[in-house]
Each structure stands twice: as C-alpha cells, then as structure tokens.
Image (cartoon, rainbow, N blue to C red; front, top):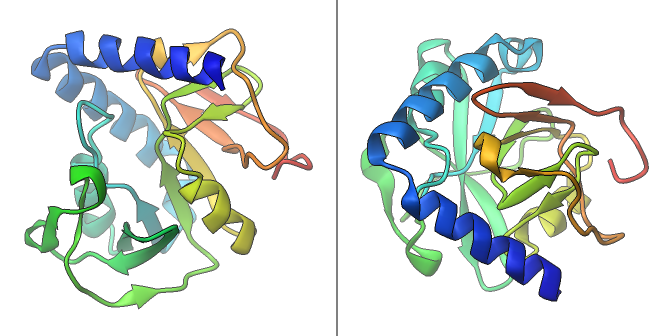
Length: 189
C-alpha cells in the first residue's frame, strides 16, 4: 500500500507539472494510436472514462467513436458501485464522485461486447495497473469478464514494475503517446 501511495504521489506531481498544451498534444497522439487499433475499429460500443485533473484527455477519443457511429458510455459512481451511462452529448457531464465528470442521468447500459478505455495512475511493462485506490474498475470488470480492455496513459506513467494484487484486473493493451504495449490473456484477465 505504501508503494502504491508513493507511486500515486509521484505521478500526480508529474501530471500537474505538465502544460495543458502537452497534455492535449499527447492525448491527441494517444487517440490516434487507439483509433488505429483493430480492437477499436471492430468495436461497436465503447466504455470510456471522462478525464479529470490532467489525465489522458478522452474527449477526442469519444468524438472519434461518435464519428465512426459507435455507441459511447461513461462511468457513474454510486457508493461502492460503478456503472456506465450512455453518452450522446458532452453537456450530460457534471462534476460527480470526487469532482470527476459523470452523467447526471442517462440510459444505464450493460454492454458485454464493448471495448473499455480504462484510466490508471501507473502501469508496468507486464501489464499491471495501479489505479486510484477505489477498486471500481476491478469490481466492475470482475462482473463483466468479456469486456476488452485498453488502458491509456502518458509515457511517464509506465514504470519498470508496479505492485499488483490478485484482485487486480489488468488491461490487455496499454497505449501511450510513444508506444502500444500488448499482453497475452492470462488468469488476471
């Protein structure tokens, strides 16, 4: 836990130190790389987080999904549960859990055949993920094992190794502004 806390503190400081221009430039490059993935091109439904606090910006990815005729849903948190609501317009988003943008209301979706674009604080080259500590994605994905998982991150969020727990559900692909990392399907999904 201490190691995860230290990693979070380090990454938050790095994100905060980035200019808005760099965050946008890198996010656009990540969007380009994600939209080139066969997994994205073949997906009819996209589950994507609404970015907050200098995370990889997902607005561009959402716009590309809409342009391609894909249905899009974003997370909403209630208590310890996270579910996804269909997003048809950015105007639906309002500050929610911890100030993170989420839809005030909307159609709750239960797509099992979707591609998830997941956030994270840090990742390693084995596909392990350090999240924000709430366990929302792990709990959601445990109930929806068929959902494909792509994490987006800035290059500085890739560490040689990060701690992992047996309950962690890792991404199958990590996309940064510099590379695409793919991992074989394993017991950690």
